[in-house]
Structures are given as structure tokens and as C-alpha cells.
Amino acid sequence: MTTATDTRVKELADLFVRFLETNTAPEGLFTEDVFLDLTLPQWRLQTAGREALVALRRRSHPFLGTVPRHRVDATPTGLVLEFEEQWEDEQGGWYCRELMRAELRDGAISEASVYCTGDWDPATQAAHAREVTLLRP
Image (cartoon, rainbow, N blue to C red):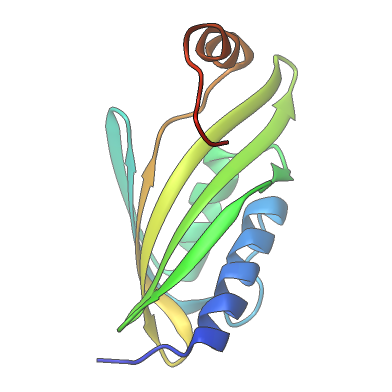
């Protein structure tokens, strides 16, 4: 079992946000043999290896965007990261919310489970805004 320091957890969260915004994995973010288990609303995907994880990200989110909000919490062996993504394509602005539980080895993410709400297109976001009043953003 590897114990994560709060400082390294924050650094990794910042590196992961940079990865999401650029589709390029910063040095030291992932181990070479990183395992990803990605759950979508009606699909599940897995990858093994840094290059495969980056390739999956580029295929599933080819448009660069921003991470307007995120929160990270250290766990005894890694971190939990809650985040939102926004991006634009020819249809307009998209949005999703995700949660990642990650295990660390030698100061890098070696295993991650990501749970995604799915990508909300402009029509879904508009319907949500009409029908739901959120208590917190």
C-alpha cells in the first residue's frame, strides 16, 4: 500500500486537469502500465498502458475544453477527484460531470476508475435548466 501526501495529491489533480484540457498526459501523471476502467451511462471501457489511455481520451473527447470546477480528496492509497468538463464542437457547448477514484504507485496514477454522467449536448443542458433548479452549482 502506497500512502499519498496531500501535496502530491493536489499536484496530480492539477496534472490531471491539464491532461483533460490538452489531451496530452503530463510527465509523471500516469505510470507506464496504468489501468483505466471507464464507466459511461450505458457503456464500459477499459485500457491498459499510458499510450492506450491517452488514445482513448483523444478518441472520446477530440475537442479541447476546460475544467471549470474540480475537487480532490486524498485517500490512504490515492485520491478521489470530482470534476466537470465543458467543450465546444459544431453543435455548440457540451458538458459532463465525472468522478475518478485513483490508486497511486511511486507518486503517479497506476489505476483509475472513472464514472461519467455522459456528454450533455446543448439541448440536454437547456432542458435541464428549464426543468431543474440546482441548490448548488
